[in-house]
Length: 101
Image (tube, rainbow, N blue to C red; front, side, top):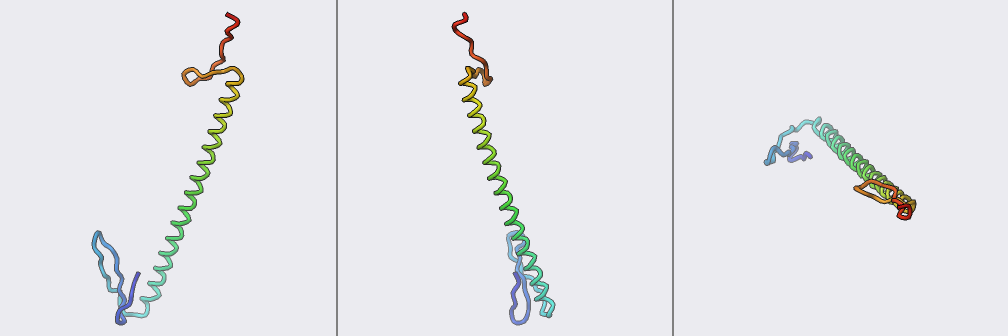
């Protein structure tokens, strides 16, 4: 952000850990150029905010998809248990009939 002091334009920026003041001049062209830089900066901030909102929307969609997957695994397990299956080493297997031995 630039500022005007006694008719002269200056801009402060950070280089490394220090603040450096840059003299821009006292001409009439300085103000429009600075205005364009400010517009670009605001557009950049807007783009960053839109990208962050898009990332959050994707995260929410991922959470919902994960929830549906968890529900599908739970329902599948319930159907298999009711159908006479059990898990052995994380594999579904049909239980043997005890009466046929």
